[in-house]
Image (tube, rainbow, N blue to C red; front, top):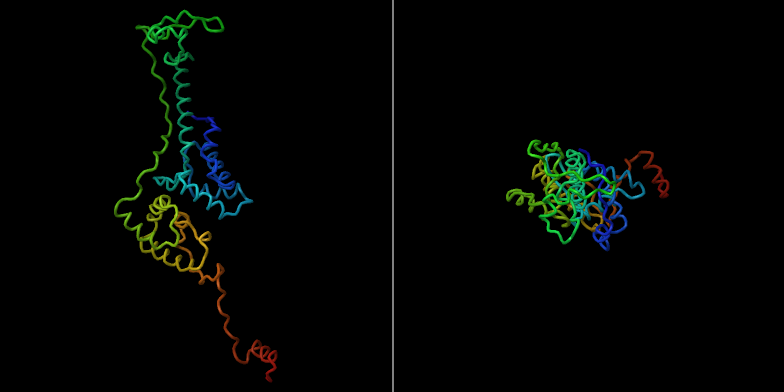
Length: 290
């Protein structure tokens, strides 16, 4: 059964983001929540990143990635690695989707009983009456607002209660836990020590698990060493987070010329061959008789 709407709790949202996010980060966070509500499940990491970059065209692509990495590092967004690959989930969305699923399930159960409310949801008519009296059937003679008496809720012995229809809903993923095994953690520690920036380790561990399915440890370590050399002298804000580097498969990047003050040095231009038109023009410009 489809969940068509979820509850929105503005006070919880304000308490969760106040003073903890910039404007760009909140925009990415809320749009990610909306995409999760729309799919009613975790959303693919890479596909969602591209979708956010299309939705926020006035925002630099690197800014979108940086906002997501900050939200993951701050545990506002969960990076889940499972059979479907890397996916993004927000605990707020998980809780509200669970409440919406319960609401749909309760509606289905009530519908199977002819639309009558379940006995445990009935309020006490008189607060002086005990709960036992309320559930024993003494309220069966009380009329509804429209004038029709409430029928007896307990099923008669002759008619066994009908079982509610089975509701198949995809279970929401469990909350984050330990990701890497002891052997995998040793490999990751070697790579992480080489990488030039140490931020968002939890997200990096999950990204590492995905990267190891398509690359060897040697390839990832060699890529990290090459990237560390490229980042020498670069401001840290221009260095990719470990999880971003892994998710974008940056170990496959071609080597970049050595950086100087944040800009790539142009390769030295070789002098023209002697006797070539460029050489003759250079000599004449220098006042040398050709």
